[in-house]
Image (cartoon, rainbow, N blue to C red; front, side):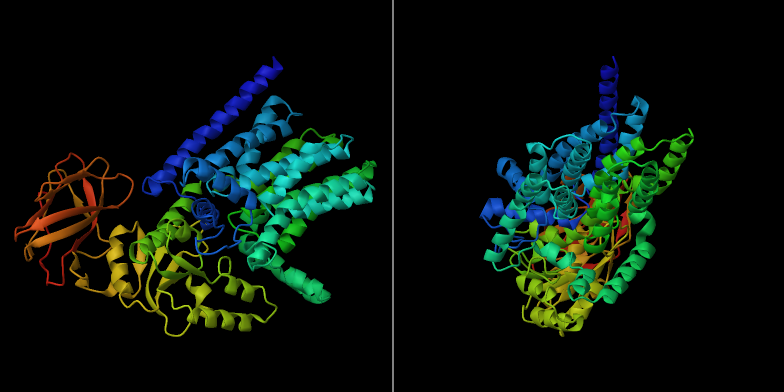
Length: 638
């Protein structure tokens, strides 16, 4: 009977997660024009590499060169396998993450088996929300897989500390976890040192043999193709100034760097990002002191989670919202539960007080799940629109970027110059070279000036110190809402294409709700060959049921193309002549295109439906450079 009740409770937990998953997925589709987008550009780096591996046999951001930009070779291979079976599409990362999430929920449930049914259900639900599970699910990356593997490894190691033997499955998990993320090496080092301390030579050797193959094989491939041993993302982003000082023997420099990093992280995003680590650190410290006073054996080895938190803090990458550091919670969980079992608590209120404190620390993480659709909307409105702009106007061009993933995934023939150093070997070599920062910036600037790209799209403060002379600003896009993008605004820089402002202006008809700025928005009248905008971006006009737009035109006979950006739930837009109609998308301002042949007559845009619709922009594209005489738009029938 008890087993049946727990199985029913687990099913209820799955249904609860499914309910919130449906709500969040619908919200993402609503904010992203009815399509799935992940929150992070990094997800599209893995997707682009897997796409090129399957289609062209090249493990690279583009099909033109090998690039070790993935810090998770196992995840890239899994994506490639999915693309091989089902074709290249955006749903493979989500499906893989859902599969791993189902297993993770089950394993978290098993981890809390020693508690009553109500506590098992509540703690499992809160733990998963604290990851935060929906945010990392729609990151499109390997983090759920990594968290699952880390939880299983930590649970087996804690069991080993209390007398159970390690089987082959432990070493298989070690092998997979090292392929999932390189941060795994931090706690595997602790395991290895423990085996050496206990003179368990066989376990130490097997652990080492299991951990080495993935990074060794990947590193050899990188060196063969002219890169360094580590993935470029690890070498560039994970380069530690503290480690640099320690290797030089400058202890005081390392201490100053550590204090500076501590101050920055605590003042910048302490509450939402470090709340989990602070809680785990002090909770274990308090209870380990109690265990020490009670004379419990093996208590020093429960210091592993605080030590791991410290190692990650010093040498790995922190993000807000939390992403790379979430595995720390999964690693600490079995240790925390085992410590709590060994502590004798006489006050019955103590568990509830501890729960209240934990709830306070973890609440910021719970709330991040709610903001998941905002992250996807940011990528849709920024990086995806950048990718579409490049695809429309520079499908075989050379583009300088700092966010490379989305542009690479949605384009086939574009050559990318990555000034961050993940996908361009020359920049990578400069970034990891032991030269002063000013010299490094000068070298990158000189390299960019020799590339002669068609354009650059970048965050202004990132590219400004290395911006070559002669590159000029053509325009900028600014997000209305932002959660995960490194910067809210991207800037377009022209290099050799003097028509870039015209292309940006023409592209405005396709944009979602972003704030456009810069030089191209100041242009009036003709915006390119035969194109004219009927009113400025940002102005909306409502067309009620039965209403019309009358657009008086004086045009030569010929073929024209009309772009309309409008939306309305169930509304219909009809063009007279020639009488074509479309049903509008209810999610966002989508561009619709009409081809028509004009013979001097007026054009009417009509709403014959019973629902109102909203126009954001109209744009004509003519056959040549003939003058277009457009008088003021007349709205009739409102």
